[in-house]
Length: 193
Image (cartoon, rainbow, N blue to C red; front, side, top):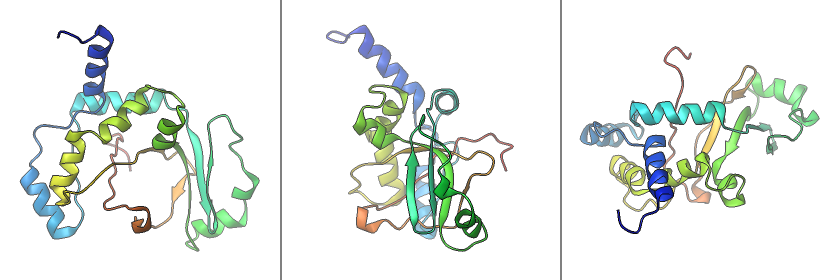
């Protein structure tokens, strides 16, 4: 189109292929499910191509750091390249959390909002995904399904659970931070257990 550079056109195509909402979703059924249960699982929320491309970005292009908490110690984050083994994370604290005493977690992560605001990889694929999470198609889907027409923005974090990683029982009550609803885009192999 007139006034659009080749780069801008390519970026739009890349945006679509990284995070495109599945047009075949039954919004009415999803709304009813959320209204009845206050939660809903939206299978195949992305197109197959977008899910495949996003999975590849996460698997091959993410500089994973380590997020962890053991009881009152945390949350902590070691960015990629920092020492992954923090001596405070070992021993009795983690053992007690894994035995059901207190709250804790340990997993690989890439905090997309922090990265976006800190210009860690300005314009990179993770920034594009975060922009998509805050674009009209995704925000409209969240608003429609939840019935909350005053949602403003979405946060984003890529998370990877490797052997030995865990997340203790928790809830998503972050009312003081302005959270209204939580979402998870789960991109795992079908055989994942």
